[in-house]
Length: 246
Image 1 (cartoon, rainbow, N blue to C red):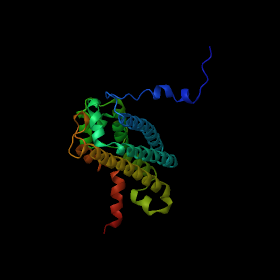
Image 2: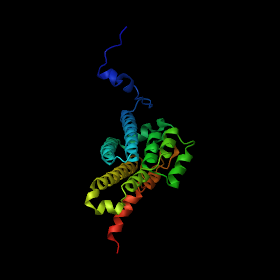
Image 3: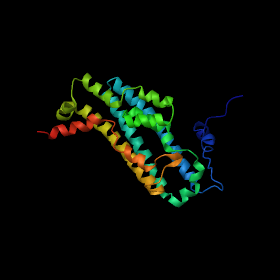
């Protein structure tokens, strides 16, 4: 027998996809579906961001400046999307979340392997980040794979070495405009990611308060506040000060 003709629903596996939202509260709280959908959608966007970061990494490794420019443009668009959807959770009143929070068990956003993999793929290697990873048990394979690759900053620095230019030169010389645009695209990515972190902190404090622990026994906003200042591209930040010395 021939297989059924492929259509919109079957191509996107909508029956399976739309069956994955399973509220736990009893009786079902009307706001729990919102909470689940936003977080599930975030994980789908995280999956795509990881896919595109891997493509960006390959292009940097191949010294493909134009290809890397196109890749980072898409990554930045995706980060804006995943950041914008946080606004949906701003409509969740704290008293409503309190009514179904107990049904979340030990689940916490800090357990998102994909988010940790994005941090690692982007270049996070500081001791605090590595300690957080170890605190949650064995490092997931997805995260370890990202840690085993050079940070994006190292990839970009290697690209500059291939072109025999310095960071200062790509900003000072008009002929290096493509590399400057790539550097600014990477910096835009870091700023966009930092904006997601900041809005996430604000959202958590708005819903559960600044002094309340997070779900699953985490530190809540106190931990999240520490992450806002993390840097993926310290060299791209440092070079700016060199133009204003002396």
